[in-house]
Image (cartoon, rainbow, N blue to C red; front, top):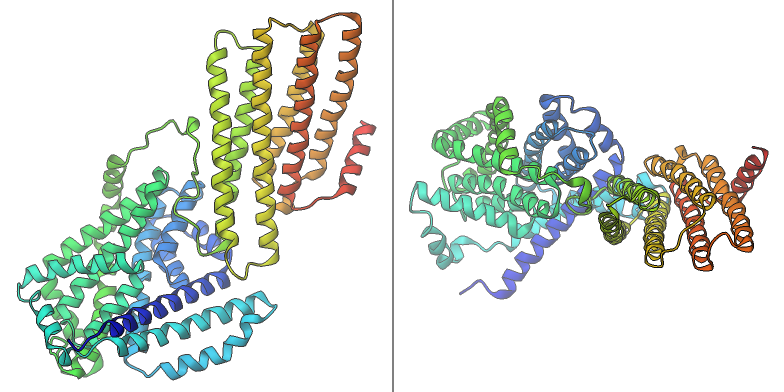
Length: 583
C-alpha cells in the first residue's frame, strides 16, 4: 500500500496545525471583543428575531458556535436571558458558524493564500510581545489566522492522491453505491468526524479538502455537512451532562433543532443539490456542473458546498422559527426542572467548562460566589434558629447545618478549580489575575465562616448534652451578637454581587468594628457573671468560646468584603474605626 503510517501522521499533524490556528484565531478575536460580547448578548436579545441576529454576530466574532451557545446558557442561568431568548441566539449561532466554510472555500481553494498567511504572521508576530494588550490580542488573532491557512495547505498536501491509491478509492466507492442509503451513512460519518475533531469548523474544512481532492462527490460531502451540524450539538450535550437544568435544556434544544432540520433537508436533498449546482454555475459563469469529477468542477464544488451549508442553516431557522415555542415545550417536557434547587448546592452558573473569554469566565465565577454567600446567609439563619428557637426541630436543624457545611466545602473546591483553569489562560491582563486571586481569597474566607458556624452548632449541642444553661442577660447578648453578624453577612452578600469599584468597604468596616466592640463588652460581662456565680463554669466556657468564634466570623466577613473590593486599605479601616467611635 503506497500510503504509509508516516503519511497518515503528516495528515494528523496538518489537521492539528489547522485546529491550533483556529483556536488561536478564535481566542484572539474574543479578547479583542472583550466584555463587549457580554453586552451584545445581554442587550440585543429582546425577542427571538434579535436573538438570531445576536447569535449570528457573536459567532462571526468568536468563530465558535460552541462559545456562543455556552455564553447564552450562562446568561440564562444568571437571569440575563430567558430560555426562550437563548433559543434565538442558538439558532443564530448555527448560521454564524457557516462563515468558516466560506472563509476556507474562498481563501483556501480559490487563491494562493499561504504566502499571504506567512507574511501576516511575519508582520504581527513581533506584536505578540507588546505591552499594549489590545495590540497583543490583534496580533494573536492575525497569527492564528495565518496558522489556520498554513494548516489547511498542509492538509491539502497531506491528503493522498486518490488516483495513486486505487485501494482507497475502492474502499470509499464501496460505501457510495447505495444511493440514498449512502447519504444517510455519510451523515453519520460527518457526525463522528465532528466528535473526533471536537470542532465543526475543522470537520467542515476536512470535508471541503476531501471534496476538492476528489475523495468524495458533492452529494456525499453535503451529507457529511448535515452530519457535522448534528455532531456540533452532541459536543454541547456531553458538556451539559454536568450542568444544571438550563444548560441541559439549551443543549437539548440545539440538538433537536438541528435534528429536525437534517430530517427535512434529507427529504429534499437531491432537488436542493441541483439548485446549488445551478446557482454556482450562474454566479461563477462556469457551466461545468459541480456533480462532475473534473478538477475545474471540484474547485467550484467547494463554493457550492459552502452555499449549501449556509442555505440549510438559514432555511432551517426561517422554517422552524414559528415552531420554536412547541419545540421549547417538548424540551421542557423531556428535561423537567426537578425543583429543590434551594436545598441542593452545586455549580449552577458554570455549566460547560472554562470559556475562551477570561472576562466571561470570571463573570460566571462571580455568580457562583454569590450563590456561596447565599449558602452562608442561610447557614447563619439556621444556627440562629438552633440557638434561640429550636423547638422540636433541633435534629433537623443540625442536619441542615451539616448539609450547608458540606455544600460550602464542595463549592470552595469546585469554584477554586474553575478559577485555576481560568488563570491558566496565557496573556491574562494584570487586573484579571488580581481579580482571580481575590476571588480565591473570598471563597476561602467564606468556607472558613461556614466551618465556624458548624462549630457553634456543635457547641449548642454540647450545652444540651451537659444540661448547661445561661442567664437571661447572657442569652440576650448572644442574640444581639448574632443580629450584628446578620447585618454584616447581608452586606457581604450584597458586596460580592458588585463590581470591585462599587463595593462600599467603609460600611463593612463599621459593621465589623461593632462586632469587635460587642465581643469586648460581652466578654467583660461574662467574667463579671462568673465572679458573681450566675452560671456554672462549664456553661461559661461554652459562652466565651462561642462569643470568640462569632467574632472571628466577623473578621472573615470583612476579609470577604476587602477581597470583593479588590483592595486591602489599612487607612480605610482606621477611618471606619474613627467613624464608629463617633457614633
